[in-house]
Image 1 (cartoon, helix red, strand yellow):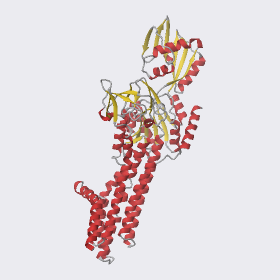
Image 2 (tube, rainbow, N blue to C red):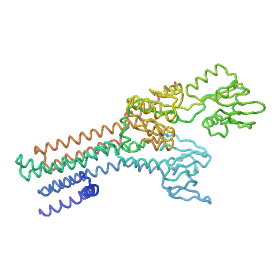
Image 3 (cartoon, helix red, strand yellow):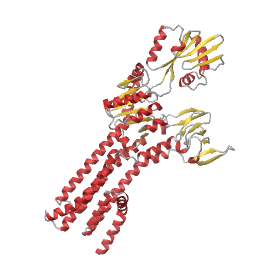
Image 4 (cartoon, rainbow, N blue to C red):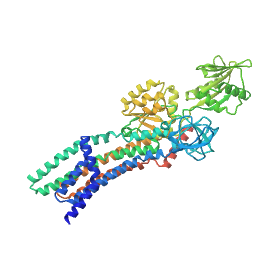
Length: 612
């Protein structure tokens, strides 16, 4: 009967401990690194040698259970990648040269292929709209639930949904270069880069295990010779010590929490480039914001147009549309959108005066269209209009003047509107104790006006791109760890230099490459979310480390005073490992400290304040 029981226990050891033993031995002989698996196997073998087969089997079972929990934690945290991958279909409907449709794998698509996307279908890859009009639901990328209307030639993103009638798109990138492919790669890479805390814990594991392996034999000899325990009791207590002193819970304190944090961020629309990036966010004391494309939409719109009289309105609009037609400059595009109902007329000679504006000679009249210094040069300008337009310019608006034969007939005021979420994000960061700073190339008055609208506390204006890095260094000396938020090529050096660089998802590739965090949904509210998530992760890891060490100390003391046996030691030790893993997994369900209603109220309040 005893032999049968021993055989059953041996089978239990082999089935439950095979992978742990293999992992420990491979790491020992190949990498010359000792890990906790070695301690657990030695404890189980030692307990078996003195006849405690059931305790040894229980040790192997619970240790394997804890290991399975850690694997589960890693898999759950990696689900973010699978969810992202599922956003883009595996197959696409491509037009053949004869106009027929063929269904092929998305990965085989090439630049220039034309695809058919039925109503309600997901766009398989990035491209441009090849039909005249389309309605696209971009909620998966931007978080905005209202579908966007697009015209022929407009960019469409793989993973978004065709919410209108059947459309055709032309492929503009290879499958591995799409937005979602880049995001998936970034998340995958991030989860393989541990945080500084996790790296430190993993780094001391080898030393800790060696200390335990040396300490256990010394403990056995000490209690045998000094306390007079029997050899069997001394050896048994040594196996208990080998079990309870193992750093399993300590090793699991940081990694599951870090992976869960990265995955929660990915689900929210943020990509952290590694555990160190998410770890650094909670250390930030100040955050620098670029203005254009970060706090603002980055797309000017005509917000006001004034004319000398109603009699000249139509003629002015026609002249301006004729001058700006065909230009790709953002200001020209904004004016053309404003004048979309104005008919296009043929005019005489149009001269593009670089850096100034346009000069049109038509039916004996000379028209000038451009900024104040050009279009009003030598012209009489009404004092009221002059004062009003100067105020608009001070507030950050671009004012385009129109004059005919040195008489100012009209002006158009263009504004790069603030993003709706800018004020709310800044207010929340201010409330979290973060110093908010704007570093802009605009003049001081314009920068201060925009900063006041969103609630930014400190402004540095008239900065060239290379001067932003110098200012960042000065601010770091003043405040400590500093973040930078930007979207353009000119922001890349500062993004790279900052302790944490946040790149807007709609920004340039170089900005996203150099940043530590990519805000895929282009939403500034993600920054306070990231800060809260990072702070929560830090608190969880600190709690886990203190809890793990406390349990080890208490179990060691309990073993010395002989108040626990091996099964109790196993349950206490491995139970603590499972608890710290589950505690780390809580980050997968992290929610902002503000509820939805509070967020909506704050957003509405911020909008009212901005409008006023």
